[in-house]
Length: 323
Image (cartoon, rainbow, N blue to C red; front, side, top):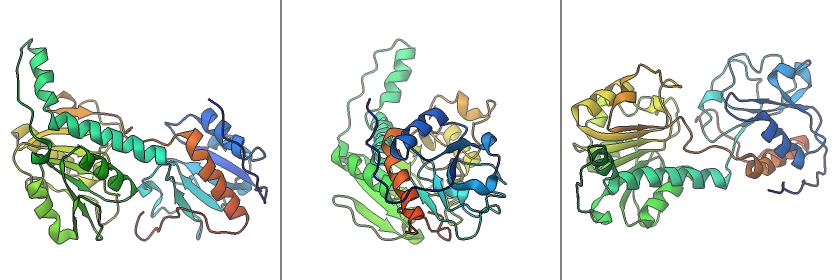
């Protein structure tokens, strides 16, 4: 695959970029970024000899103290969409903008995962998976898509994309967000006072909210119990949005019929956790949507150049809101 054509910078960025991620490949990201900005020096954290020479950071969940002594830091790019690990930290230099990635490939990847997980329940695939393990021909007649109510919590860029994809399948889609939204063909609700109404109607609940002080623990055991008995839960957002212990108990009791979980309140999920052994739970290791270097590098490079020209970066988050 050919690399993108380098930008034609009006300003050559000064200073180095530090990369940090325990999950992403440094070599691939370095190659993609240098295809855009050939003169930019890109370092891993253990290669830093002069913290004051770091002007830019591309990071995913850096440890506390990571930004200490980076006195000339000018831009922090979060290596993903959720920025909760970068909000409210003590080691951030004052006034340094934080941006998130809005790569369209990430939105499509997330929507694909949500569509897969939702249709798996809408078409009763777990029923047939279990029957296969018993060598049993267990016919179940498919339900009409419009009879299946899917509630999407969170209608930001990723949530709205996924909700629209679900609606295109003929499913009845409800959307919920803290602020009012309008999406064609989707019944949208807003405000905490409407959340229980949405939950009570959901055959399948898809959680796509950002993690903020206001949403942490939002789906308590009491709220999850508002779901109709046998409802399925899909969480592709953050584990801390849900009371994981209460969710586990509701899955054991059958009030929650099933769950597809990509995120957890502790990651990796400990090997002794009962969720691993539950037949009605599908677990994936936080990969519903990830940044693709070849497509995301251009927007990262553009923001580096904007900051170098003393312009505000695109996709800057508001730390007070948490997204």
